[in-house]
Image (cartoon, rainbow, N blue to C red):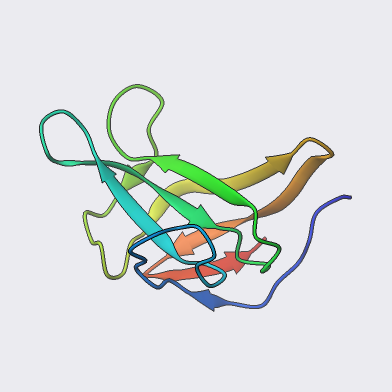
Length: 97
């Protein structure tokens, strides 16, 4: 399938990540009731769900904002066919590399 390019997509907080709009995120908490990460709908609109850890081992750095999250490093979403979408989440906006 290969990498899919998209335009900038704003984050929307979702009650459920299933069938949410492209770029939506839903935070999940760890055992300490603090955010441990979030699931997201692929910003390209294909319906694939990915995940980003913001706590614990191998976590992305996160600015602490649920409304306008920034994570580093970049986010790579892969499917069974290989790399699919790669980009940055900065100030609540997904941007393709």
